[in-house]
Length: 147
Image 1 (tube, rainbow, N blue to C red):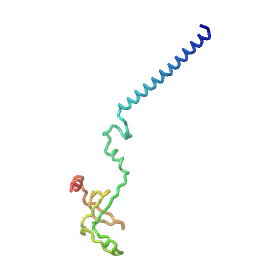
Image 2 (image 1 turned 90 degrees about the horizontal axis):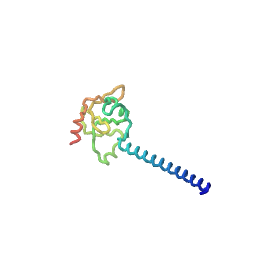
Image 3 (image 1 turned 180 degrees about the vertical axis):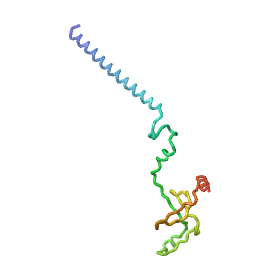
Image 4 (image 1 turned 90 degrees about the vertical axis):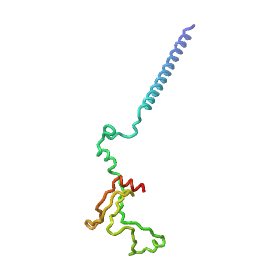
């Protein structure tokens, strides 16, 4: 074998060993990423941000702070009535619409359409308001839903 042939053979061995080394490194990287993925899959995913210490250990006020800025619609209902379209179209300025509620009956206070209290009308600084006289308990609300 000539010197040139030996050099070529030695160079080919070096080239093969570099390719083998690169292949081994690639296999190791794949194995490590697979192990990391398996470890992440085994651990419970933390989807929501942790807002305090241990789950279930936060104070009631900390839990309430999350919902304090949510807007709600409050409606005070004097009473109701049903009209035909014919009678509705006949209404004009000064018309009186009779309601099903009697004078002196408490008014219903609804939050997002759910009855939560009853009260009476008050006037404070030339503005109408309502003084709550009865708060509906959750048990009473559930009983009314069952009807």
